[in-house]
Image (tube, rainbow, N blue to C red; front, side):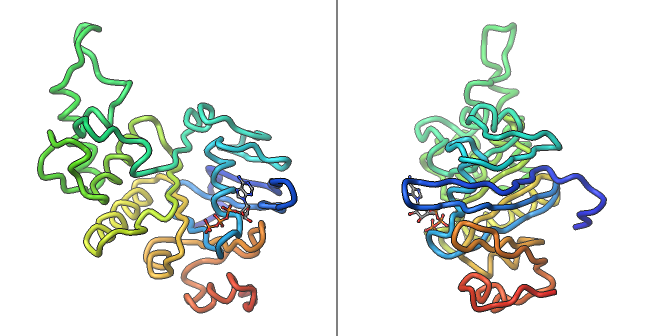
Length: 251
Ligand SMILES: Nc1ncnc2c1ncn2[C@@H]1O[C@H](COP(=O)(O)OP(=O)(O)OP(=O)(O)O)[C@@H](O)[C@H]1O
């Protein structure tokens, strides 16, 4: 990633968030570029989820700045975050199980015929094309989403996020509780997003996954990003040492 030449899609500067006595974020800094997969790693309670919730607009930071495509925000609300292209991909929360794939991808923004009827044929064709571009294998496009595997559901959720104008896609432990094949499908999907120019934030405890996918890794400890390293410059062992506080930041 040639940071000097591109504008980051997102820059977080000195963001703080306190819950009563707990300082969940103590001045976190982060940046992610278009076409980059950035992993955020850190022990339980390091502040990873709190940080991404400030990006999705689920919580307001107490102070700090969130800069998106060069524009500064003190906080975001969920609507604003979506409109700016920030989308957190939840395989379960965002989908309607009893509806088919195309309906789920277009939910609320279906292509219309004569401004009255939903153009179902166009919707299905576009849905198929979206999933093909993402490298997702869906055996039956008319299937209800509730019948799909976890990996396929993730694909539908991603197609939906992109359809709604997502530019930064955030995944929080996307392969937790998935089998080997499904995990491989989801990793492939995330890799494709990076190749297609989307910015991706991946929160993961899985070092294999992190090193397979990410170009850079931001390590969080006690509410701060204590190091950001290029995957090619470090080993998983180095990163684990940074997570626990035993390691040095490579120069
Ligand atoms: N709503 C809340 N009320 C009070 N404390 C909270 C709240 N949400 C998070 N915290 C605290 O803030 C700190 C950071 O939590 P956060 O969930 O961001 O960590 P995390 O790095 O995502 O951890 P994990 O890997 O376990 O999900 C923790 O000490 C947590 O207990």
